[in-house]
Structures are given as C-alpha cells and as structure tokens.
Length: 288
Image 1 (cartoon, rainbow, N blue to C red):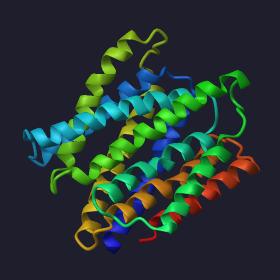
Image 2 (image 1 turned 180 degrees about the vertical axis):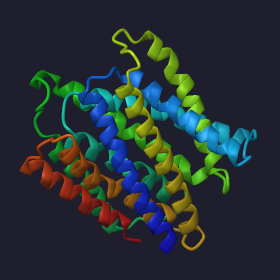
Image 3 (image 1 turned 90 degrees about the horizontal axis):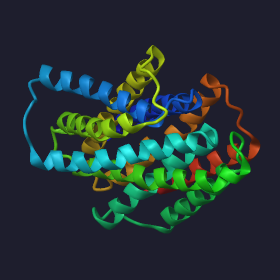
C-alpha cells in the first residue's frame, strides 16, 4: 500500500510539471496542434525506444483498443485546454482540469464497486464549488470570451477523465505497451490537424524542447499512475478511491505553485480559496 501511495505522489509531481509546459505553450502563443504534435511525436520516440530496449514489442488488440480510446480523448483534451489557456491563467485552468478526478472516481464506484459515502458526496460538492470560484473573471482575454473559455475548459474537464479511467483496465505488465500505443495513435491523430493549422509555427528549439518536456513528464505520470493502481489494487479493492485523488488532487496546488513561480502568474484571493476548496474536496473523496 505504501509503495502505491508513494508512486501516486510521484505521479502528481510530474503531472505538475506537465501543467507548466501546457501553460507555457499557451502563453508563448504556440499553435495548439503544433505543440500537441511535437509533444506526441517526442513521446512516441521516447516510449518506443524504451519498449524496444526492454524487448516488449508485441501486438495486443486489447491494449491497442484501450490506447486508441485514450488517444482520441487526450488529443481533444489538449486542444480544448490549450484554447482555454489563452483566456485565463493556470490557477483556473489547471484546477478545473484536474478536478476531472470526479470522472474516474465515478466509474470506480459504479463499475468497480468502490464505496460511495456521504463524505464523498460532500467532496464532490466542494469540487463543484471550487470550479465556480477558480473560474472568476477573465484576466487574459475580453469579457465576451467568457463563454468560449467555459465551453473549452469544461470540454477538457470531461475528456481528461476518460484517459484516467482507462488506466484501471490496462492488463498487468503491459503499461509500457499501453503508453507506447497511446502515443503513437495520438501522434497520428494530431498530424492532419497540424498540417491544416493555418497559424502553424516553425518547429523552433523552444517548441520542440517544450514538447519533449511535456512528453517526458506525461509518460512518467501515466506509468506511475498505472503502477500505483496495480500496487494498491493487490491489497485493497478501493484502488481508484485511494490513487486518483492523489494523482489528480495533489497536482492542483503543485501546478498552480509552479505556474506562479516559473510563469510568474499572480493568484488572487478568490482563486486561492477555490484551489483550497478543491483540495478539501479531493481529501474528502479519498476517504474510503
């Protein structure tokens, strides 16, 4: 159990770094599909190099099917999040994205039989309140763009939960293969959109470096989360309830703090309170 919790905490740390790369890409005004493509291409090269080195290359239709669903949901999540990031800062965007922990938790309760209690209901209520608070007023775009931001950030919220949910179906010992399939398929999905991008930017060193950093942190986060679910699942039937709030919950303050320090984004009192409510909600959700 302790090993699984430690792995989940490490996953939240690297996911925090992932959030900074997304915010940096948006604030540098990189075309969304350009960043997504270079990130997924970098991840494909990295993970396939590991799979080949470990002699794990094989064809598994079950894993390919899961990875395909994850790839579609993730690519759509990326473009929604990068679009929303142009309207508001990391405190709003990153918090709402990771409160999508409600999606895999809901599946864990309905499908895998994890317990649902009044405490978890209160946690869900706090997370919804946090979403309202951290939304606040637009500070990077015009007021008339508020509905556009709401549409895209809620789209990212729902779609992001799909990929996390799939982790519980990955067969034991095939996590690297799942991530490899996921990155390869998502890279192919992103390519035609990149080619059609009217505002495509040239692959500068900054764009490629940022994409590689995002890919490395995301690959590590996915593998650590799957491993954490596996370790906890061997001891407890409440694996989803224990792991997801850690990986998707603790990453909220980490991402916001990193954004404030690295990207120098100011966090007002309303949003600090919203982040705190979101964290409180995640803690309540994590109580078995």
